[in-house]
Image (cartoon, rainbow, N blue to C red; front, top):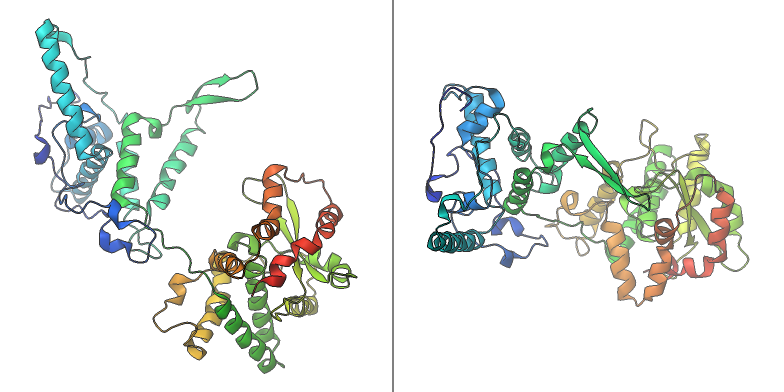
Length: 469
């Protein structure tokens, strides 16, 4: 090992076990309450799952002993007297076990039996002396990415928002960070291959693309699982109760500008998320200047009065600044006064001499984040829970279950299906997303062109918000 001593370490599978200090999360059935993970996918009849190796693991996954990994990273042997060394060895053992558990016990066993048959056949032929390629020694440096793997394991211990620890999808961001950094280095990328059509690919020299590291990532994912706690969908009854409170608050805050602005902001967030079926990252794209520009023309439409809900900004996977118009019914069939609430909001902002930019801004003047919009949503829902216990029960954890991220959109989609709104109307309501994915919009296209496109289709576009209960 590194010229200092030879490593002759070897284990039976059941002898290579996790460290006693290993507290890294393992998905259990009890973690699945209220999630959308199928409990039947877990095998609790294997108590040593992820805790020990199996005979034959080395035939499928590159293996080095923990001390060799430590030596490759630090250039020295670990000391049991140093806390950081003890922690590192715990992480190295866990990372090794995760890489081994990228394959199931039955798969490892089957592969091992096939290997035994292969070796028996080679012996019959007299080929057994050189029947396997030469395996080692491995390089005297961290060639597989163990150093990064240990860092990712420590990251996995961070507390989560709805679970005890963060989810795999958050942990894997460290891999992306490391790859991105490597690719900025002069030797981070290798040769580039280009096809005749102009597309191509480049060779990455990041350790994250090594076979061992890919197995490690797969093993971590299998161990941590995916506990998905989706945002609770808001029902028509919860929406109705919210607006009852907001209508009452608007009257109470007659002489309180701050209170009225908070009330109008909450109402407009609810409308944008529910009646326009927008996701949280789309709600905060509502553009004040765009709405003001076409407000009068929209609300005085000769046959179909509506409001021009304009969305502006840079959207994920889109090139350049985009602008979309999502017309909404001025008043829904159930009597929801959408135009009134946005008119109030626009008037309040005009009193502050705000005429353009994002409609929903935080105290710093920046576009609200989803968590900041959640504060408005949660506040009104807590009021509903307090005043309308038959709508939201005391057992509902509002801060954990509701979010502007998806609750409003999920509720709108479900309620639209409940009242029989045709599928084509629902899809028409979402047509701007299809348009952006299919053709997109170059930064040079004007606001007039976007509103003109939507204005022609107003009768069909406002049907979703009009018929939604």
